[in-house]
Length: 416
Ligand code: HAM
Image (tube, rainbow, N blue to C red; front, side, top):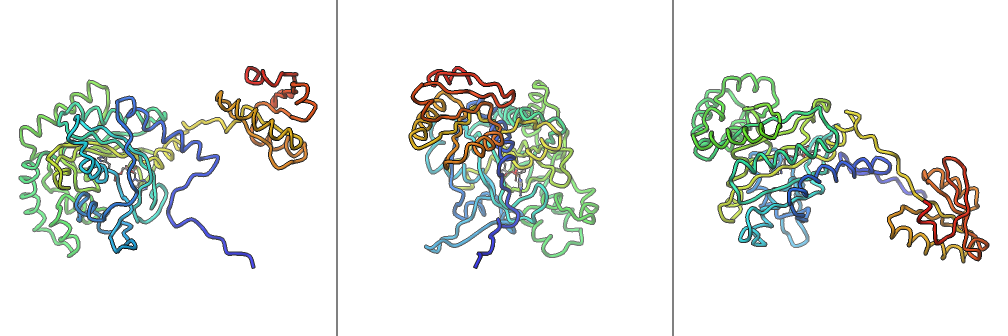
């Protein structure tokens, strides 16, 4: 009896050839500017103690309250598939004592993240981010640099149809002053129980509510940006000045609410024009209380996460992802057992020199092997039989022109 087909779980993003090449291009180019700025790789587990995200990301957020993939392991410990990267980085920085060394700690990461959201175009339950975190420096210049690095990643893909939205959530004192007035404002609203209790944990959440009636209710709500104290205000002015110096354009969005509770001060999002509802291609900001919240010392931090899936969709929508199809430099077709082992050796040497070399395995008939070479988009083809091995010379066929030339096996590298 034939087995039933198993399908991928609902809402996961996955990349198979040939689109996987475009994905790889996007992922590598998005993070390349961070490496040029001295950020170093940090590679962390995809699951962590559930408590890390509850305390780090915040219980009022949708991410923690509705979207976590949480399970008990065999030892009865509650673990959660990481919904984001920042909390894990802070946990690792504290655990490995990186914060006791040279500051700032500057790290980059790339990998899968998990949120049990309702799947739709550009919104997945498993998705990819690249990100950076800079920990231990509270200088507006690094805020601007972090934003510039993200911007350079998007530019490297050729994207132009996006905007940078910027605001400041101020320091603890500014937020406390705003919170008093905001809560007073919210108390007068007629809210359902769930919304009211969310507002109690973090009243800013209500600015992010997608319901029209709530948007209307919040129309006149006091804005945090109007409550920044002098030092928060000055910091934000400096960030804006550095961005202007760098020629990075932004629009102020004082109603921006990030989906994670740890943000303080400079906060930003990159929004793409052609992606419809899921238009956020990246976001980040300062999180000056997070390390202390997670049991570490009181150090500031700033970083971003860029959505690789969405950046790829954006690049496709803008038509800037013009990748050549995958090309092999040489397709090598061995005839017979002896030729096969010779072909393996020749391929190894050419690959060591950086050439893409594919072998026709499986003792295919010559015609079938030639077809495979054509399909693989090979630039050159060589048939290797006993006669070629004993003479040390092969016929090198250029697939595009059909032109053939006799080439010494030892000189193949120079000819392809
Ligand atoms: P975030 O805004 O939640 O921030 O996610 C960053 C980016 O990941 C989003 O802008 C979006 O492109 C992508 N993304 C998020 N959820 C999904 C999804 N369900 N499907 C596809 N793409 C998605 C963070 O995660 C913060 N940790 C960023 C950060 C680092 N802040 C400071 N440091």
